[in-house]
Image 1 (tube, rainbow, N blue to C red):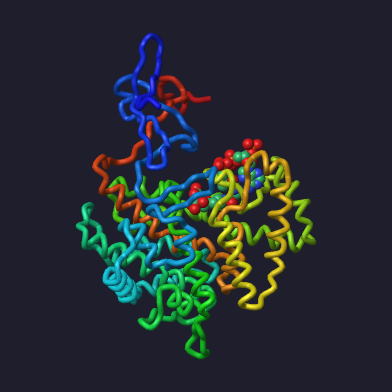
Image 2: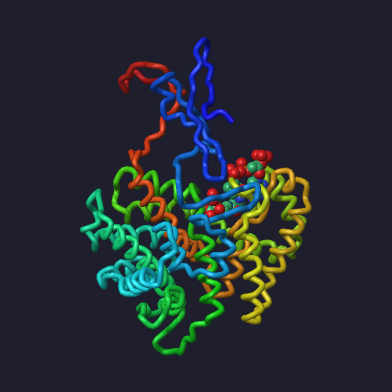
Amino acid sequence: MPDTAKLILGEKSYDLPVITGTENEKAIDITSLRNSTGYITMDSGFMNTGAAVSNITYLDGELGILRYRGIPIEQLAEQSTFVETAYLLIYGTLPNKEELGKWSQALTENSYIHEDMKHFFDGYPSTAHPMAILSSMVSTLSIHNSWALKPNLNEAEKYRMFVLLLAKMRTIAAYSYKKSIGEPYIYPTDNFSYCANFMNMMFAHPSRHYEVNETLVKALNLIFVLHADHEQNCSTSTVRLVGSSKSNLFATISAGIGALWGPLHGGANQEVIEMLEQIRDDGGNVKKWVEKAKDKDSGFRLYGFGHRVYKNFDPRANIIKKSANEVLDALGIEDPLLEIAKKLEEAALSDQYFIDKKLYPNVDFYSGIILKAMGIPVNMFTVMFAIGRLPGWLAHWKEMVEAPDFKINRPRQIYHGPAINNYIPLDLRK
Ligand code: SDX
């Protein structure tokens, strides 16, 4: 294959370099295009546009491959923990015993939030959506860590930032739940691992004994590992864009949370459960809802189905589906929504519309079943996605600010507005 692409514009032709990836993916490098031709490219939704050369995550949408720093997601799901996977994504290698010990200890020691921050929760109504609380409280962390507002952090300061965000976002999430049910906040403790601490902060209470369930801790680790990164998805691209202005990392992550909240992205896991409940309440006629999803005028989509990259299957969905069965069996829960989900998947995957459009279950389709079994309220499902995705956001931010070709992201446009015209004084307007 030539390592250049030839662009012919009128009488002129231009050679554009071709970039080849580790797995032989190909890209035409148009960095010089506007200066040499005066042209830009257009690509609505960035369907065909690479925003970065990255070493973090590899996806193959046709083969259903997902690897973090080269390690297949199936191996990490089986053998790793969220804390270890977070380190792998951010620093590029699996931590040795000493590195992992230091990292885990730092996360434990930094999991409290400033006591003043608890007063912010007083201002939120109990009905506040926890994603709104999360994005504002993460941005508020910058008030208590003004040292991190400078545009260039050194290695030690970046490490401290990553620890603060990973440790405190989990606490903010748990406090938002306690606030919504009017229960006292439960402080993080040194006795628990990262995921066990979260479960304890969510469900313990001073007046009742709460036993952390190891099956649920294992399932939560799995959910977080599977959500930890996904290359240039909408929220990660948002973090890269906002971070490229050298805005502080708290504000940058808060922007990523906002992007993730959308029902087409991370908000889909909440939509899936609400959709399954709607189908259950409507008598469980999955065929009817599959037909509805095919009807463009219905405005209804099968949430948890389809993906911009995966056009065969989402490997994460397969892993989560297996874990959903195991968790429900271990807890002795018969959740009718799981049966409806399986019937819906079967009906959709045998329907020509879904086959032709290559729409398969994605990571969000089954994750809600497990989160619901854990007792996580539905409106916190996307918060769980955000906690899981945080290491990916941090890894991409680090890679972006340290890139040799770092620059502020500022796309171009083609203008289709009115040609030049003049201001009309108010009393002369029709
Ligand atoms: C995540 O990017 C990532 O990596 C995201 C993510 C991550 O880890 O970060 O994997 C997490 O966001 C998973 C996706 C969660 N979203 C949903 O489950 C929402 C439902 N899915 C869709 O809205 C849609 O499939 C998207 C948003 C996921 C992908 O949208 P695309 O790539 O822009 O595709 P599209 O909307 O143009 O759909 C192509 C066709 C359309 O029909 P035509 O216009 O060609 O006739 O497929 C149809 C769509 O109408 N279609 C669906 C459908 N998804 C797409 N029809 C019915 N139900 C659906 N779910």
